[in-house]
Image (cartoon, rainbow, N blue to C red; front, top):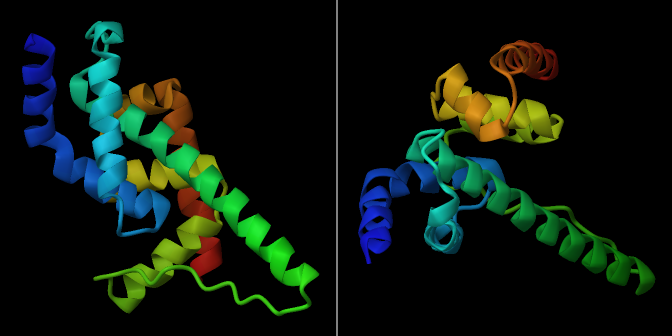
Length: 164
């Protein structure tokens, strides 16, 4: 029962941060179900949390993994739809869900970030949007801090090349 209270408290503390992270990470605004899945998975795995990291970074790691799984599912479904439409001889319009409540500049940056490779997207979202520290990012990504710094700098350069 104490585990339920711990997760409930973490939900109150971090659910909005997790929600925003998942919106940026997946490019969708309907991520409430994913947020719930983060905390359900955390509750199921609370006994594996040995406080080697803080609970915030642990929850962000879970959220990242859930987002990756969800994006894989979406890609498989999209590929199936494309194959079906191609098979039927219809044209397919690649129209992603509109990004809600973002101004035009943020939309362009978001869309450009989505074109970058996964590692670059991860560090740009965690550092640039969620403003996590290098240490927190290293824990979430299970990388050394130096790799986080190098990847972040490379990601910024790649983003600048695509924008300008």
